Amino acid sequence: MFLKGYNIGVLPAATDLSDYRFAAVNYTKTGYALATAGGLSDGVLQNNPE
Image (cartoon, rainbow, N blue to C red; front, side, top):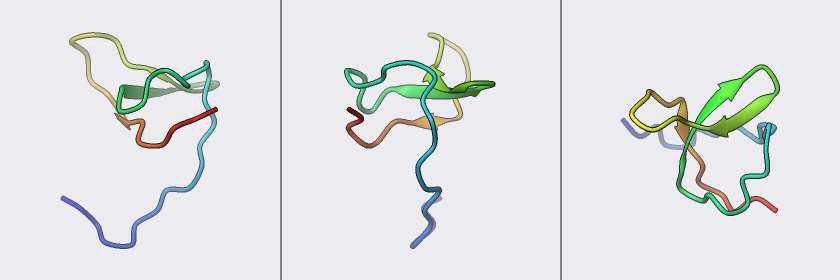
């Protein structure tokens, strides 16, 4: 479900995700990291991080 006007803000990355736009990510103790293949994810990286 899309929530119009919903913005979660900027969240930290645990690793360099600059080459993984639109990849599934999980939130870890240190920030967001790539999700494992076949596992559940917390979201999708939608911006283009530097």
